[in-house]
Image (cartoon, rainbow, N blue to C red):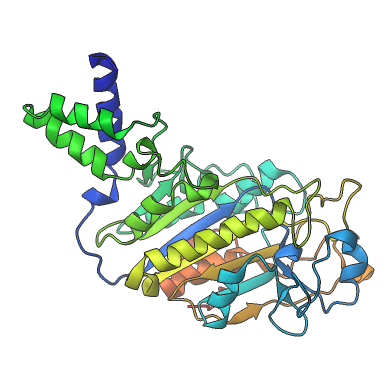
Length: 385
């Protein structure tokens, strides 16, 4: 590493840490936190919370069917109709202790099956894929005291707009070993300006990838878990954090109790366990909403997967959640009940979930949420906090 490379490295590290939670405050105090996790690709809600008690379900799902509750690798029983995927043990534990609520048969107003338009409508909060501002940015504009942070390399539509939004991304710099770090410290030990900034950089979340901590974890979400927890637990850190996790498109070889989708659900469950344990008492003030742009078809396709659908599942976890509930106006899966003869028919607008969190958890005026955050929507905010 020559001097020029070193200076570029220091500059990048300091820039990343300008928005580090380390610089945002000292001890966390009690105030509401909201985390919005977007599972991009179209999560199969029928696999996550399977309606095993619906007489038509198993006939559609074939080899993707997870065994019923009580069987080996079977569903985790929620009630006589629904069971949770067996790889979601942490979510099940949160549900049983009243810290998780499940929303089934939900969707945006979108009724076609394009990822791009579905994502736009999910994030802009309208029924128009051409709208270029995000509903969370509009919320920050209506409520200017709301500190919002977007975590990730790309700035998603949900936070785009005129209101100022903070952003943070993990460092993409190569790993650096402890011996090299020691030499850098020695090199700049007599330079107060760079020595101080080097220590700030090495103490912040961007240093995790440099030390190999982030890259040693599995998956895109796991790479930002430590920074996410640090941001959440800072007293004057962001109150709302938005982040994405891609790769939920399961067109082929989806699997049932085991397989690619099950493995990814296991990673999601591990992340929930890490966040709930790592945030300490801040967890009591936290609501985390997990959602996706649309569901999958009820029937499997010719490649043992599922195609783009409509109705799906969202869920909220956190110590602030009034949970242990599954909220669903279940339409059934008989052929006549399906949307277009192929999809789970949505019976609730997913914006009702978001609006419920803004009103009941963050304390925003419902009229402003309906008129300015989700303009044109006929909302019925769900109370789950």
